[in-house]
Length: 564
Image (cartoon, rainbow, N blue to C red):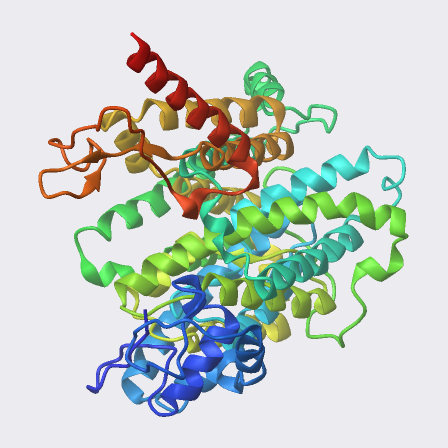
């Protein structure tokens, strides 16, 4: 399908500009958009959406060479048609998400077990790069809870490894960022955008729900002001430890945490009834109020922990990512983690991108999104970052507040840049319980209860069983083992279904055509004749053996009927 531009003066965003349609189609084919529909599409013969086969491989190589700058940098497609209506929507949206991303970036960095400022640098550079390479105007790139907990899980596992235990976690996280970026970029150029369909929805939902619960458990100690020893690693062990030490809870800390979560939930609930509430920056308001209170009250850090000193502020020159300080053997340990983080992060991001692109009536290519996310991670890795992807809550806010193009991300990056340069010392008074409340609220958004209920309503017992299984395995065994099992189940399911041959027995209809009994109930089989139809589109090396066995079975059954 082709993306089209609105001819009116509306603020509808489309990545495809007017003019140069023929060259743009050739570039889109080379970049892997049109050939996802039909790999033999030839824009030389048809410019109105028809499909025709190319004559040789040389034609397709020639198309790749003719990819334009617009194909590699989608920003060149929408910048010429930018107007004040789009600027108004992007400006309001960018400011709204900017007020939201600053405290989230600080909080998610702590969730990942990293210095708070790393989240600010990660979000700033990733937003700028995605604005140039990305297609979705509503997708907000930057630190998110899912990626943060994955990074923390793998970093914790590395600390128990003899080869990795002495390496600084900042270097490891930074090395993960560039590995994730390289892996995503390679997948994009190899046109592996279809992997968002490989990971089962049920498996993904079970995993994400378990991760959300794990994140909430991780936020209970700072909310209750209970110190949990590092030796308590398993989630269920932490739950039991917290229950046993509830008498150590600091009531004032608990009160602030409960009120903070309650405030965020209340604002979210009111947004359903009052449209203008969408523009209320609840997180920013909460942070400002609690910081003022902490500063004025002057409570000791021992009774009311604050974020504290975060080091020097401002931008620094780019430097080589942490991967260049590691040995090849150490890098090999990071590859598995980078692959898992890449797949999970990409699937979550592209689902959001496709949802909002469909809502605003333009197309998003999974292959291009792979390259955009990969480029964002690669560039950000030169500025003290860790892996980053699209954020579901911030993307929802961006969409609701009127984002039209990726320029809204540039506005958000500008807000982040001002914070990095001038405001970092202010956030030293940010209470840790406030950060825990922000993360707790974000983890609740990961639980999509309507999808869970729907599986049971339609009696999709297989999907529901997979979801529950992955939920239990992830919660009990841990995040890294849970996602590996989930990926294995999804790949096994796909392989199993593709290896099942499609062999149909045909009969003659009254009109003399040959159809299966499912296609035409009146189809009659001819005595002494066995007519079999193979679905050649699903016939390949993996199911040839099963196809032979099934054909042999039908032949033997037909011969037995004749002899009886």
